[in-house]
Image (cartoon, rainbow, N blue to C red):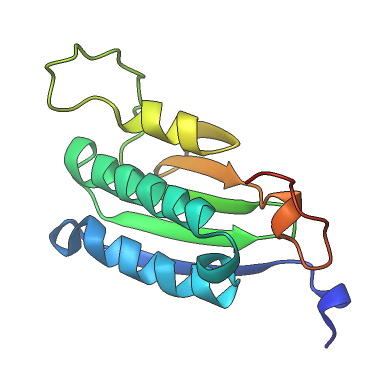
Length: 146
């Protein structure tokens, strides 16, 4: 099978509340490495890992449920989806400077190219999309940035 015939690749993992966000980050880092992102786009890989951490933590803390983490790469975008058992959609908060929490979705919005949340029959899905910069693609010209 040649790379030109690749349409999409994906991975999925169930993360019980007891597993914590570190397990999600470690698992995701392994798959980012298979895409080459940890070497060719380390800042983007760090953004994906932070978003995964925030989304899984939100599922564990706010939904009090197992998080189903799904990564799908379609050669355009890495879709990071976290499913939890709560049908309540997240509300973006605007925390004070002294608040200890409430910034998870603000971070995801800042890091991802796009994100969305929707209800499904057994809870909700939150999906963040991360597009690989054109300058990081094989054969692409450099970005010209120092």
